[in-house]
Amino acid sequence: MKVSTSELRAFLDVILRNLEERGKGEIELDQDFYWHVPKGAWNDPYSEPKEMTLGQLSDDIAELRKIATGAAGSLGYAAVWLAAILRAVGEKEVP
Image 1 (cartoon, helix red, strand yellow):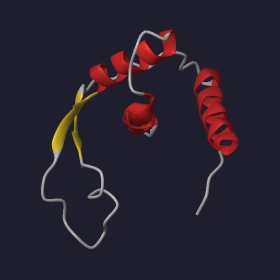
Image 2 (spheres, rainbow, N blue to C red; image 1 turned 90 degrees about the horizontal axis):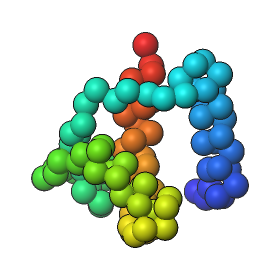
Image 3 (spheres, rainbow, N blue to C red; image 1 turned 30 degrees about the vertical axis):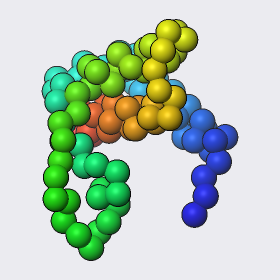
Image 4 (cartoon, helix red, strand yellow; image 1 turned 180 degrees about the vertical axis):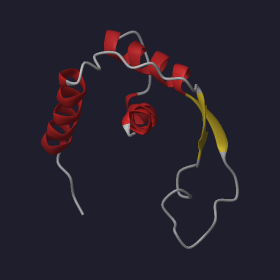
């Protein structure tokens, strides 16, 4: 399975435009911490994850802000941080 960066950009654009059209230009995330299933374990449906770590949305946002301003950060892991934030937004926005 393949997905192009232009498709990803289009997906994000549709999602973000929809939020803005519904007056959700800013979203309050009530929970900061979440369970993170490490790489290699989250996509193996045949084995139960042996360990999980804590992730923190405020840290994820801080790292993405560093990248956005060119200050620092790891572009290689940025999609993982963004995914956690998008999940939190999506779960909050679903009634």
